[in-house]
Image (cartoon, rainbow, N blue to C red; front, side, top):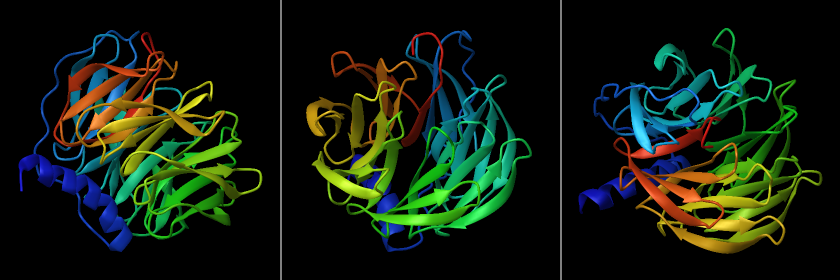
Length: 338
């Protein structure tokens, strides 16, 4: 088996392990050193590198890596706080979350969470951080101020994706092993509903108006569309092979899906719920983030150790940035060039 084949197998097996039982997707490579600072006005993109145990900091204006922050073992996903002051990183092999200060680009806290944390998101009011733990079948709730875990919410089997509504009242959790989405009332930390979706739901995103939920289903090669008001799957959209990372434009017009097995990004029109374009990117695309301004899509290519940049006006990849080893999660912060 070639090196690229082994590494692609690793990213797919991270999810396969979640479907079948506990696993350890992390590598054992050391992080690299800082490479400088970017202008603070420029937008920054943060990329979790699973095998480097680092987060690459990319200047969106120049398309260059300007820093590399060493975190825990097996960083899998990243999320930027609404105020842009913190970056949260799930360390899947260490059962922790690293908290990065974006001003100093240093880890200021390490928070123990559940088993094999996979995905992370932050509430719109910046008060709570939600972490999906694949191995322990729950979601850890971290108080952003005290950095302490205040709750562990039991959900479905092998939770992999998390998304919170614009009003912060509801959390949706994609359960890869149950083929469901759990609906959680954040005020009480209780599951109020369970929505059947496709096979192996891996990531999910809400439209900006909070009315629809799009769920990427890794093993059925499609995206579920959920009507939030009715709480049911209303449509299923075929996309590329092994869809994983997913994001939506701030205007809600398009949803973008990284297809690991096709080396593409599928572009979905939310008006027709159909694929309108397919964009070739690097090898093993899995993480995806849309820039706050909606002009770009950033895609981590696990097998290429690169980040692809897509222009949303043309649906074409315009740049490729070399990052760390085994890039997975991506998050984009606001700023010039976003």
